[in-house]
Image (cartoon, rainbow, N blue to C red; front, side, top):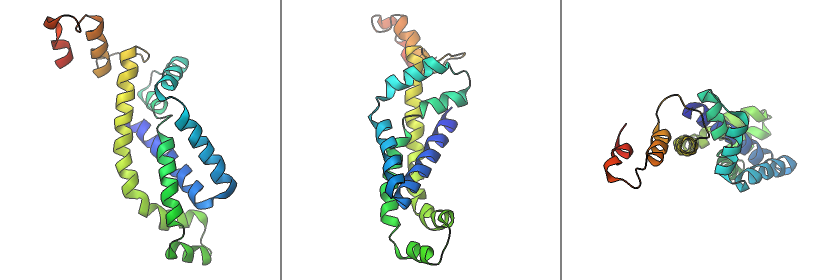
Length: 173
């Protein structure tokens, strides 16, 4: 779940942010409008609706659903990095020499973004974990074994908040 969601969100953000920042113009406006819409949508209610509509069983599908709203912020920041990188001398040299768009992005721009993208993979994984815990706690996602959200839900339903003898539900399981 974490791997699928993190890789999907990171790849989508990288493609959208890089193309938007390098190409500019109408493509930039369109992709950043899409990104702004995704940023403006409330995350948890959107995830609840998507999980209720699709009723995912596979952890990979759950990961994709959980990553639906975390790619947009990364896409905007990658775009801003690409805007500063596209005017560097070696990128302009590649453009003047007639290298293709994919070659310029792959050889000149992406290597400069990799440290930032790598750090954001960990951030995206953390976001997916917390979102999954929230959806399991709310009972929106189906479960077949215990995880953090299920344990918290069972503890809440069992009265742990009101009985000190049941605090062990929050510590282990």
